[in-house]
Image 1: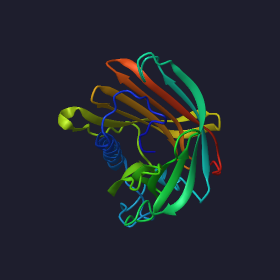
Image 2 (image 1 turned 180 degrees about the vertical axis):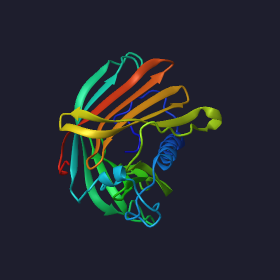
Image 3 (image 1 turned 120 degrees about the horizontal axis):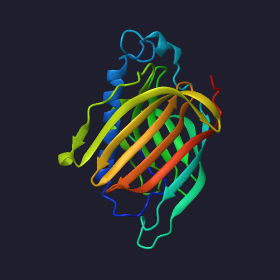
Length: 259
């Protein structure tokens, strides 16, 4: 759920603080979007708004998970020639990505127990996504790549929404900027639509996240299906108008009972 790149290109990459800012922008942008789109229901958490609309109630629970649930994605990765290094060959490959719900765990000493999903890709270290899953909303907490030297996750003390039941098409978040405007994020709820992937056809909320990281232009489109989770995602990165990265993932199968 947090923004990431599997097997990233080896162009001149900024320092880790840069990526922490990117992750924070994504969460803040999603928060502004979600909070302006609708009100969560009373029954899922103590700080929820008084009531939910009929549309929101029809989407509850948003993601009814149990320990061991899985989502398998077909991933297509494209990187043009000469992007990762001078003379590097073009990358055009397919691989499998699996997301597994591990239950509630503490990401590190001193941090609370939260819902954890582990993302695995052949040939790469697993990544753990930390969230709070309620009936009517999913809140982002952080993530951690499980390398031997990694001891602490990128973590948000104050969780922010990723998706809320009843989100409305046409909602746009305010643009978020820092570092003199060199880093920015804007999120839009584009439409509610059916999307067809190898696992089937799903009613979905299509979110578009756009922004700049220095001279890199980012576009990330997510199709989230209430009751199932992320069923499709497209990520692209451009430098000075030139495509340098494109990744598409589509749900192949899930252990969840699809509505």
